[in-house]
Image 1 (tube, rainbow, N blue to C red):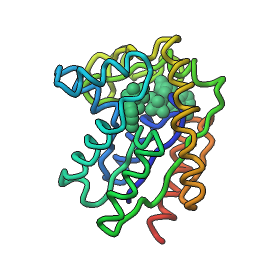
Image 2: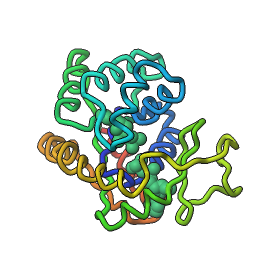
Image 3: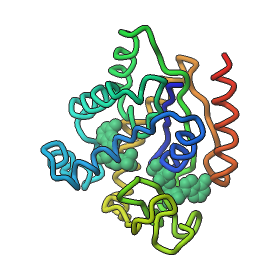
Image 4: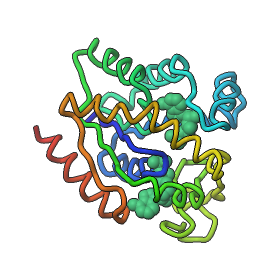
Length: 218
Ligand code: ADP
Ligand code: AMP
């Protein structure tokens, strides 16, 4: 399966991606996680990406598209992938389409996790993430089993620098201007599936799983 996760920051993409990737054994490709890894390793890419990420802006398309195309060459993408946070612009979506078309392929579905703006600030300022494996928690809605430690790998969870109130507001603005047009992009191609992301994490996952199984049997 080739799946795209769409939705505003804080919708629950990363949370659902971990569950989907585990259940269906497809690699979870998060461009945000790849950039953060590069930042922590102080690579050239990380140094460039940080300038934009700290301000809540998108990393330029050329850098992002090359990064994803390169990631697709990994063996683990043979049976598909789950994209979380990519594409984020129409240019990225077109690049992905052309990349797959050249191999006679296409995506199976674009899952939009929809949440109203009023949920986003709470979700993001309460988010804690595992710097080692990328798992996402929330101090109120989804706390780790042991306070402050990742359930999956035991590392200490941290708050992301770009989850401050001021940066979150910029990111919501960027989403509305640059990423929201992708909803229509995939709707017009009959590839869009919308799920109400205000429900409990397990409920959202149940609905997504159902849809993936229907798509997988087509
Ligand atoms: P995204 O990857 O879309 O930015 P995350 O998956 O990191 O979003 O989720 C943002 C925050 O909201 C995290 O703290 C996460 O634990 C929490 N969260 C995710 N899904 C839900 C949900 N359905 N209900 C309540 N909180 C949620
Ligand atoms: P995320 O982890 O998906 O919330 O992404 C965190 C930040 O990484 C974003 O605010 C952007 O600065 C950057 N980023 C992640 N994915 C992309 C992308 N596809 N295009 C441009 N910038 C991205």
